[in-house]
Length: 493
Image (tube, rainbow, N blue to C red; front, side):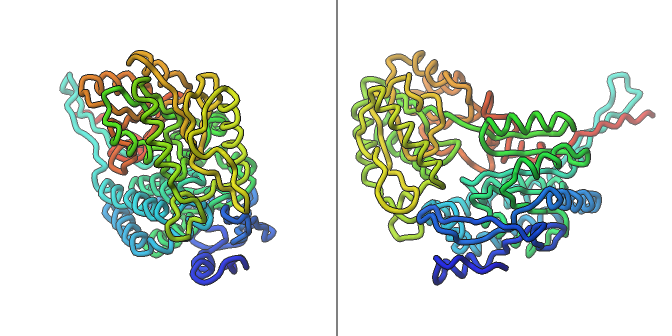
């Protein structure tokens, strides 16, 4: 294990030092080729807290070799045994929630309360798929002519490559790893270079839970394209799953075409948050706080465009600004902090540019809107009123604590504005009318809809989008199907 960065002290230093900072290949921790490493920084200070192995192309290939070698035996492992490993991992994550939450906060920046919420959410995918492992089924039928029996069975798709993002370092891994283990697939996981420590800690948890060597392999690298493309083009790989930007997703889909891979993509979002004239405004503002400020707004499910009926827009904006303006900003590990830093300078620069563009187009800043002095990549919770449809925030994903408010006058206009985007991940709508709610959720071009609630993510439900937000589903009964192939057998009598 590597030593912690000198900037950390006490429990923070202990937690970081307790995590392997090497590659995990074939059940062994090993250095990267040439012992190359990269720095992991605390976004609240910009200082290095760890040095993690920086994999080469050869290291990536070794990880796939290990996954391929383990596939046949793992596929034969009884479903109950696979499920018990996931259940044990769920219990270990739950026991270590405090340490895992602190680790996540140190590398990603979110407040401890947010990190603990993610630990609970992420662990639940292991519990859910521990129960799904024993429910992989098939069917039996008589052919219409009576001469043949028709059997179908489901088998693991084979070795998988999983590329996970920085914003939910645990949950974005568990909702891919969980169904793969349950289905009998081996895998290579490439966590984001901004937040690799949580995934490395998760690998340790799975080892302790009894996962056999080679089933899970973790490759950390700053050369993602260079190291991952050979794996994607390797004919032994059978599935690619990615969570991240639409631009990167498009390139990965192109690369996957060569091997005709099974592919699932969870890409960008531009979530509309609709507030109709009959909405309960207290409930709507509560929902807005969740939909916007969960994970500091650094979520593909974050409300990106607040579309509010003109009759209630001023009051809604005022209440939202009051709530967001009262939030405490600071280092995520400090008591009482509700808003941590953004993950890196580039992220803050983008948020700053989007706000400046909106203001330049006529928007009014009700709260926030100015970069604070001092270290770290902090940006205050910000509410913009009277935003023009020409502003970039109507088209681009913000990925920060900024709530731009637009207005509409009719239900038809609201739906038209909501669907006026290439993305289609999630939408939120607040109304007291059941009839309107049905019309709205049927008319929204998204994979998920929250009615009178600001959070839709749930391990028991299928997560995923349409259009440029991707395809495939994670979680729910549908989640394990992404890792299974259907085989048909015709049995003549």
